[in-house]
Amino acid sequence: MTGPGEPSAIPAAGPRLAAVFVTHDTREDVLAALDAVAADPERPGDLEVVVVDAGSCDGTVAAVRDRADGNRVLALANTGFGRGANAG
Image 1: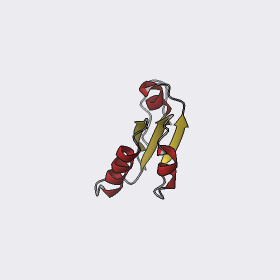
Image 2: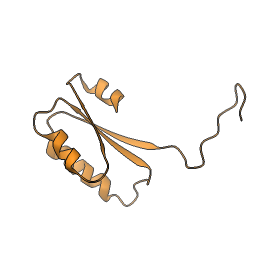
Image 3: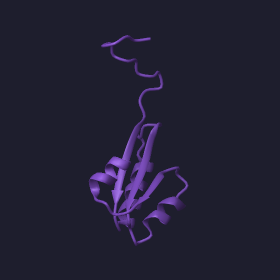
Image 4: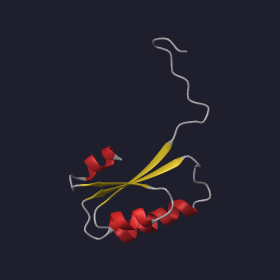
């Protein structure tokens, strides 16, 4: 246990890492990026991939959800890149 002013210990499993893709009507680009991440032999085992869709009309949300690689999808209204990145 740590006291005030002492750094907290990092869990033995290490911190989780997330890759956040913010998109708006770029289905094919996002799918290509997800393919590249999935194929990366140096991808950390605990990498969480989050796709934040900002109101796309091109089927991005459905296409990402149809993949069987466990990526998380957040479908939001188009409120801008900053809010999308923060949501992810």
